[in-house]
Image (cartoon, rainbow, N blue to C red):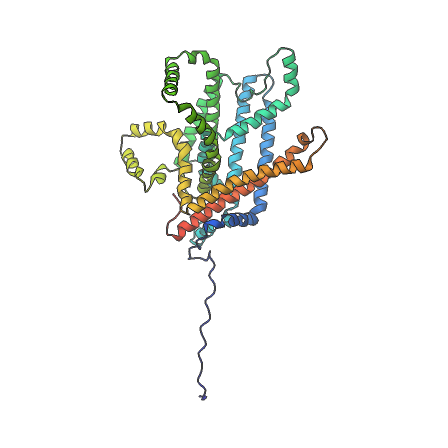
Length: 439
């Protein structure tokens, strides 16, 4: 041995561990990283999102054009039945595109990579569609999101028939403008609505029991059909029987009650006027973002449609347990009576609980970014039109469509990335705290 003593070298540092390494929970991201995480998701899957959005707009435009062409001619009632069916397909296209875009962003999420590391298999697009279809249909109808589609559909029909309707008006004939979705006879609308309800019940039972592949999407289709044809029947009945309804004792009593309240409470009118001003802002700033986050969470595996999951951990959970122990007829009656409230409020309330697991900062920043996208897009649209300008007659009537498409493309793609990022941060922070964000 040599006289010099051997000096032991320090052990080498361990290799860095990736946040998505197998067997290790992903690092808990900060809530304030939501904008950067949104852009990171956009950079990872921008092409697929652009393709999904563009394909959806192409199909939507083709269906709208076909629907307005089919609405006029002989056998008017049959044509209107088909037209409403085409409009139902337009709404269903919104579902497929929304779920497809969210599904395309799965690979960029930390939560999904963590599930893959645990051995969980990726869900197919058809599986996500089958699960999210019913909730999407309920949300879309309950909150009236289909009204914008209906306005665009009717506007396109009016624009295409402006010459015919003008000539008919000059000749004293009654025009068909604006009636393609409300011109059905009451009996025809009611009959088709009943048939759609029966088919919805059948496919819903098959979906609940896993009998037929794609039964969830078909159930959503007939759910939308039942809602649209049923609303048409109610609208037509109210229009035909308006005088009869006005003479009913219940209607008169309700009007009298409201008049008495207005006289007894001086602030009653001002209160409801203030609510009418604040409610749309609250919808756009809080309820609508959380509602779409509920759809995103369902696509990614959090079962936001379960009422028991919403009230879990609160004082209402005991009351829900007592309802579950009641007679089946009582449960059915309560379920039917609260269906509208449940479809409206359970998804956004559950989404609120999910995102608050990531902290109040995440909730506030998510809603702020959701509103800022739309406000920024509106200002950008105005800026582009002001900068370009034109003295050419009807310039923006010709070239406004492409500008609108670009604006909707940017807002739609960034919104999907924002929803995915918000869910991912909430799920990752929940996983880091030892809780799974799945129902």
